[in-house]
Picture: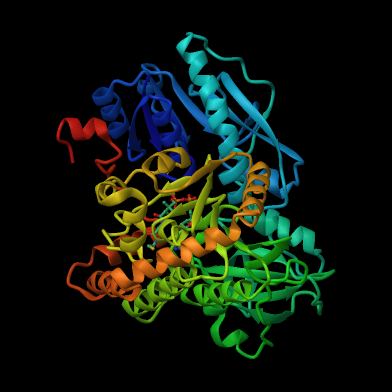
Length: 557
Ligand code: COA
C-alpha cells in the first residue's frame, strides 16, 4: 500500500511505525502536521491508499478524511476519547489500558474502531508506557487495521465511552503534607515526559520529572533531605522520593538536572553517593550478577548521558571488570539504551562548546574502557531505542544484540551533521566494511534491529517482548561464559593487539575529535542550532525531504 504518515513530530512511535511499514514492503512517506493546506497538498502529491496518524495533536481536515481512509492511533481502549488518555490512565492507576486504531471522522476520536490491543500497565512514567506497551500494541493493531481497510471493511462502531479533557493542573498538584510516596509518584509519572507536574521547591515554581522511590531516608513531609548525582530527595508523608529533573516556568526553559535548576538553594543538603546495588541503589546505574554473567543497567533519563553520567558509568564498569565473572552485559535502560551526549545539559552549560567537548570525551572514555577490556567478554544488549553516539557506544562491546522492536538511529546527521566519535571510525568498518559505512552514516532514517543485523551493524536480533529478550540475553551470555570462553577471550586479545599495532586506538580518537572540535567550535553553527531546536522541542516549519518522499519527487522544499 501507499501509506502517508501524518504526525505532529517524527517521535519514537512514528519512527517505529515507519520502520515496520517499510519492512513489510509498503511505500511510506511522511508529512509533519503543519497546517491543513500542507496536509491536503501532501495527499494530492502522494495519492496514498491510506493515511496513518501515529502521533497527532489536531483533527485531520474533513477534505482529507473524506477522500482517503485515515487511521488514528489513540493511546486508549475503544470508547476512550480525548487528548490525555495515558495521563488519566496513569493518574488513576488503571491496571489495564489499551490502544486503538480509529478511523477519522467529524467527531474527534469518535470514529469506527478498526483494531485495538489491551495491555497490563506497570508503575512507570507515562512516556515509558507509551514507548513500550502502547508502541507494541499500536504496531500489532495497525497491521490488523490495514488488512481490514484493504478488505474494504469500515470498522466497528465505538463502544459507549467518554471524552476526557486534558488533566487540569489541580488534579495532580502534590500536597506534600498529606500525599504518600505512591500518590506523589503517580502524579509525577502521569505527566512525565510532558507537561510535568507543577510544584514549588525552595520558593520557585518548577515542573517535576524523573521521580523514583528513596529506599531509606525519611523526614518532615515536604522537606528536602539530600542530593545525589543531580537529583534531590524530598520527604513524603510515609517516605521520600527522588526527583531527577526539573523545568522552570517560561517558554524557553527545558528539563535540567534538579540540582542545576535549584543551585544555591540545595547546596547545603547532604550529598549521597551513587550506589549500583540493586537493593539499596539510588541512581540510574545498577549492577547484578547471575553466575559468571554481570549485568550493568544504566537507565539515564531519556537515554541522555552527561559528562557526570559517563564518569559514573565508567566507574561502575571498571568495578564490574574487577569481579570474578566472565561476561559483562551492558544493558542500558528500559526505554533507551543510550541517546549519546546529554544535549540538555550541554545547552544549559555556561559554554555549550566546552561542555560538548567534555561530554564527548567522557563517552569516549567509556567506549575505550569497553574496547580495551581483556578480562571479560562484553555484550551490548539493546532492549531500548538508541540513537547517534548511543548506537556507536554499543558497538564497543564484543557482541551486540538487540530486541527486534527497538528503533536505532545509527547516524549523527540529524544533530547538525556532527562528525561523531565513540571510536566509530574504528568500530564501524570492522562490522560493515568500508562499503557499508555510507549505508549506515549517510542514511537518516530510523531502522529496526533486523535491518541493522542485515547490514552487519549488530550481531543478533532477539525476541521483541522485553521479558523474553532479557531471558534470551541472560541465556546467550551464559553460553558465552561457557566452555569456549578461554579461547574466545584469547582470540579477542590477540585481535586487539593486532589492531593496536596496525593503528593505535588513540589515533582514531584524535582524528574523530579533531572533526568534532570543528563541529563544536568552528564557524558552521549547524550543531548548535539543531541542539537548540531539539532541546526546546521547537515546532517544525516543514517536513525534511528525507521523510517527505512525495515532495522530493516533485523537487519541493
Ligand atoms: N540529550 C538530551 N535529551 C535527549 C537526547 C539527548 N541526547 N536524545 C533524546 N532526548 C530527549 C528528547 O528531547 C525527548 O525529550 P522529552 O521527554 O522532553 O520530550 C526524549 O528524549 C525522547 O522523546 P521521543 O519522543 O521518544 O523521541 P524523539 O522524538 O525525541 O526521537 C531521537 C528520538 C533519539 C531520534 C531524537 O531524540 C534524537 O535525535 N536525539 C538526539 C541524539 C543525538 O544527536 N545525540 C547526541 C549526539 S551523540
